[in-house]
Picture (cartoon, each protein chain N blue to C red):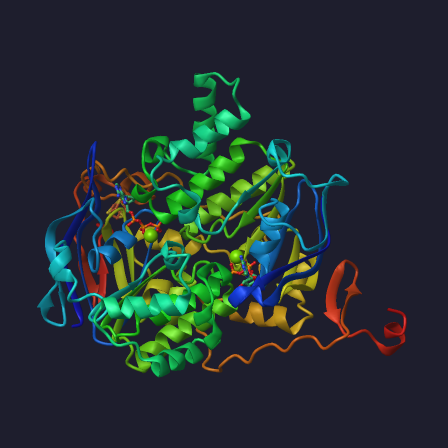
Length: 313
Length: 292
Ligand SMILES: Nc1ncnc2c1ncn2[C@@H]1O[C@H](COP(=O)(O)OP(=O)(O)OP(=O)(O)O)[C@@H](O)[C@H]1O
Ligand SMILES: Nc1ncnc2c1ncn2[C@@H]1O[C@H](COP(=O)(O)OP(=O)(O)OP(=O)(O)O)[C@@H](O)[C@H]1O
Ligand code: SF4
Ligand SMILES: [Mg+2]
Ligand SMILES: [Mg+2]
């Protein structure tokens, strides 16, 4: 197992109390596996990704463990985690480039970044990887603002995998891209895996159709918890959790006329994570809810590799 | 009506601005009340630049943009009528201000006379429209909210002004499927009440769902435009066909064949009306070429 996460809890400290953004999540990612992570906005996907690499000052590791290639990650210990970053686990954050220094040319930024990690910049390798993502070498001479969203995203992909990490977390990296660039970027990710630039991957996206294209396994989260995890085909064709089913049925398709027909979202909204209610967190919105749902449903393996947290599954 | 007439944008790039890059090249399009036009195109094709020019955030290098026939003059008056929501929600917020501040600024600028209770009601209404619970977002700093929450807050902010036209640049890119449908249905409602929307998206299935017309950009130029049903149902330009081909579907995985780049339409090319209302960029037939 590349990554083994056990009952991980990560909360945000706020003046009003703790926001339980990640509230006891257990899962594994195998060697060479691409795990697609999906779920409603605010369900804790970014929080999960960040906990495995760098928690911000307001995050608190409230319990549970994460093990990478057999070594326990010192989650929450910023200094101790430094040893793992970039080399063992790397992240492409949600809107990575907007956080980058606009006054530095990209080439210089890469250089500084590598030196800060004690690595010698290898120009030839860098250019090889730019070729692979179809970026002209001249991007190194440009400033971030001069690149379009898709170019930036590919640049960040190259930067964050330069030291061949074991685990890559890609957080919504294709959500701002057009379909053909999206396809190219998604394929590059699998290519990165095939070439050994990264071993395994957590691919975070709200776009299930896209995840389905590249992920081996899909995990769906809801309000800080795991709702369902299964091989990609199973999630798409035989989902068991009511939330997953509704999510999949709210996807519009091309080639369908919607002139007088409307799709509908899932009525209601997820519970506040400051003080989440007991029981199943989907209960308020679930068309199948019954008495038992006042109690929290455990994640059960209903078939090999298919985990569902629902009393009805 | 908001009209773009042969709008062009060039940037100086490279060391000392030694080269020019034509990001938008002679784009013409009309946005009328009560209609959603989707603007589709690959990364770098100039979509955001078009939107930024409409909002006066960057000057045009050629051509003109007019609102009801008058040249656009960015300022309070204009922004009451035309609003934009841009792609990257994180960079739209000042990290040291609470998010209420972006709403408060709207109040100070545009609604100085509105009483407290009335204002709060207005805010609550627009948050409701994007399915955000006020308690969840008000009083928070930007870093305390998720990407999708920030994105919805920006939409709510634009709606507060009750604009006639909205430039929506990838506004649903970070929303999950169910919230996304709600936002699209919201646009459809506003549309039926007269809002004109330029819906910039990379997601063809969303464009297909909400828009009446579609405009496809490739390297800054319009390569195809027309009623959405025709453009998506009967794509005439190879680039449009490629985009439709790349749409990830739940029914099939992509095949292993690598994509060849779509060649530029050879010059001289013009937009030709191939069927009523449906335009495609083509090299004109010889007898036409002598005319243009
Ligand atoms: N610093 C913070 N303080 C308090 N709450 C926070 C903070 N950061 C995030 N949250 C809350 O934690 C929850 C999970 O946020 P997270 O960013 O992980 O969501 P997400 O699943 O990545 O959503 P999205 O798809 O919109 O990016 C959200 O409800 C968010 O409001
Ligand atoms: N401030 C700038 N200076 C120089 N070049 C720029 C600037 N802004 C954009 N460009 C260039 O203009 C072209 C169009 O960029 P634009 O951001 O409009 O594309 P886009 O269609 O919105 O792409 P995406 O889908 O990736 O957001 C790109 O080649 C980009 O590199
Ligand atoms: S446990 Fe109950 S409320 Fe929760 S998803 Fe299953 S049926 Fe619905
Ligand atoms: Mg996120
Ligand atoms: Mg853009």
